[in-house]
Image (cartoon, rainbow, N blue to C red; front, side, top):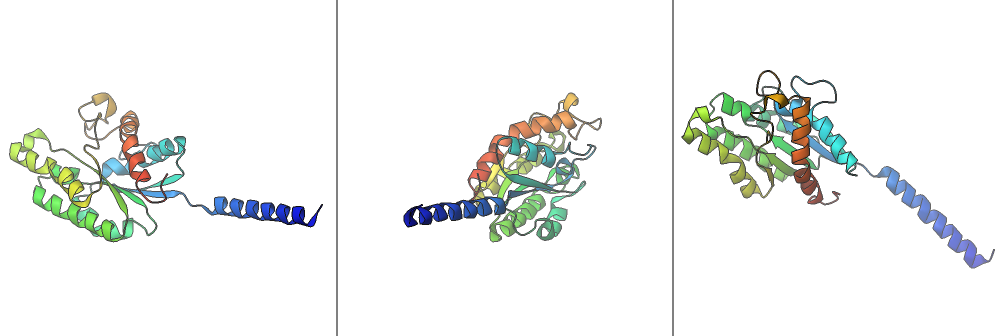
Length: 214
């Protein structure tokens, strides 16, 4: 083998080794699902919750991701704000922010819910973490004024912070007994499948919008 061919072969070998090291060292895209019982997987078995099934669906679409579950059953927007800093670790690239349902069920003023979500979005913006804001809708029995004020929270904040918005986290599941647990509020395993299927395109767009996302 000539000297030039020997050098070329050595360079190709070196590039191949560097490429393999780079590929092996690449870390998955890190997503945190931050919310209440709807995110936590209340009443569901292992692997049946939203974050587990979303991770599986994204991987099936070719995305190298991890989706951590930072849902706490019963959490309000106030509770979420209090635990946000330590619940979303450094290195997180996208947060799916889903809170407000328990505020609504307790009749908390929409002004308070909006203020808490605003502060959470501001904190995440300061940390340069992208957000997909998952909205909630108020029950009609709370009155037209409450419903209008509450439902406006999510689109208004999404516009203010220029973040992705999924208007209603329970889209396709709310009011569908066959997709809910016996309590009539939380999704069952089939309901989670429906939720994941519907939100998946929005999550993919949110990932693609993050530098380094794919």
